[in-house]
Length: 226
Image (cartoon, rainbow, N blue to C red; front, side):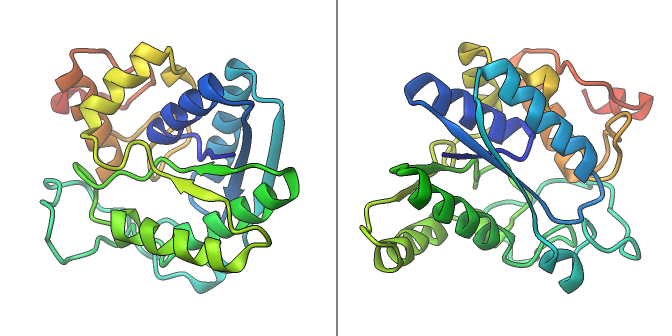
């Protein structure tokens, strides 16, 4: 089972899962600004990787709760002015409160039904925007919840990328022939990636440091960040 948002990290996770297992993929829309584009990316990545078992779910709670620039149109998505270092306490407005708990709950429930033993998620701590639900201790704690709260207690949350830098993830994806051309990472646009939000800047920097060309379309302003 792999949680596949349609972004760069989850695509590499899906490529790993499809290489090593008979994979199933779940995608959760939650009223985010780019939900239609991410859903298209999910379907295209599954097609390319040969993942036939798929589940698409819509979570209404996160949009109703709000509190994030990704789900509340009244909160602007900021331009990136440098990525936080580990340990910095300020959480950006693009953080969706406790989002990954919602995602993991759906994936674990479906894993129980399908008999899947592992749930892959592309959480990353280094070179990240500083989201608290991307920390290793979060997944250690969640695994204890899964162990206590499922019938057999034998489903494990797997975070194969969590300690990797973004450039390392790009290199791994290239080795796996992950379909980066089908992915979408931008927080605010669905036609051409803006190139200036945290997600775009992290992605562009990763491809540059990996010595590779990012295959998705960007606004001209993004060229300054390459």
